[in-house]
Length: 545
Image (cartoon, rainbow, N blue to C red; front, side, top):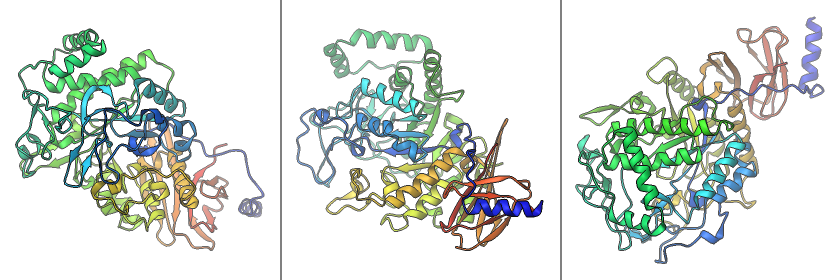
């Protein structure tokens, strides 16, 4: 029997035996999600007819204007299978609400609201990005491809004031003081920066709909419909007609209309925590309404998902964000995950130090019922993990194999430059996505292999971690949730020579493991597998018969 096993093992290693069986894909778990984030304007231009609106013709410096990217461009890449090849579970794109019409001079030349975070009207789509019909088409395409969609939403502030964009009424927004970030009050009840009006989410007195918005609805022939819907919302909820609840109604409308799967919520720590609890409650109700009317798409039994951008939140903080004079648990106010601003620094640690510490945060501690989202670069972070794109393979390996959720920022997978000649400020992080053949094909393939492995195995992001071998470095992740079980073994920075790993506590003799990186197969013999690869990495999981 021992000789038979050895012969079988040799045949597997030489590629003679290639069974049709493949590792069994597991059910989706948000705690293992790989989320692809793009700036709508910078990703892909699918409709050149909507590139110019509202006479946005002021001169701007490099990359501070609208460049044409839109919802149809995202849909195009969904349908081409781009995200599926990366193992992406969900896409998140910058806000698509109507943006301010004018430009703002921020000291670096005129800037338009290409990034989507300067909202003028929550009840309308930004025509540069597309129409409601375009969004509906995107949602259908995404769900058909088993991809969920996070909509980026803002309640904290409107867009800046310009000649074309007058300030909202004083009972809706405050224009001073500017935040000093010294404590809770100087972070929440203030404007983030100069000329960014802060929504009075603390307003307790009822307010009227702004006259400009009322007239716009009237001109567009939707006034009565909007008023009737507002009456129904406030009658159902019993909420007062204050700014926070108007906006909550307007943004949860997108869930009921289109089946949005989750929100990425902007500037969370700059608004009272109970605002988000109210939003989460109404979002879940809207999601249940949509699922009841659309039973076929991919939502299964998952709740509506809420992701917080709590600036400077770090996984080391656990559940608590500390303002100095006040501590807040945003997870207790509707959020399932928070963006982990600490990953870019922690990624400088060794694989084992990084992975084991993050697994400990998520298993058995304060964060055991929630998670956090790691990233190596983003639209706002001027100090990403690899700004000069010199550690691109390491970026992929550490991000996609780390416990927690993973956020791929558009172009990470092809090393889109984060330093643009002639550009100033944060637009360096926001260049146009490359779709020609100038990128590193091997790098993209590396991201794809890691991403599809992660997609297939919830143990990667949501499992318990154990090092099996220090040198060469091999670890195991194990996942159990109800009746769902998953286990993987991963080896990194491996030598180009044979070495054995003891797996007798996890697999029995004769079990067949497949390496998703090279598609080689390994058989467990005498409680061990003998790894032999030129790739320097193995991504192993059991082949189910």
